[in-house]
Length: 72
Image 1: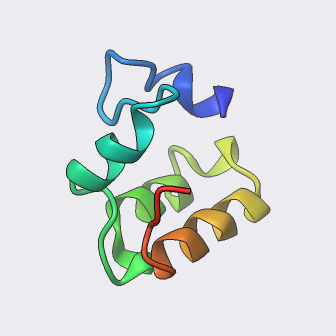
Image 2 (image 1 turned 180 degrees about the vertical axis):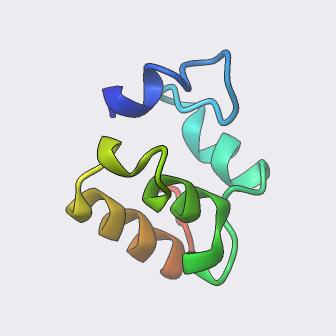
C-alpha cells in the first residue's frame, strides 16, 4: 500500500514497489516460518509500524506467509 511504499519505495529495504516487492521480501529474509516470527509480520505488528496497517491487513500478511508466501 502507499503506507508502505512511502518509505520503502526503492531507497529503503525491503523495496516494496510494484514488481519488486515479492523478490525483495522473499529473497531478503523478511518472510520465514513460523509466520508469527518472520521479520515482515513482526515489523508490521510492532510498535513503530502497527498503526500503519489495519488488523485485516496484518492478518492477510500472516495468512500469506503461513500458506507459503506465494507470488500471487
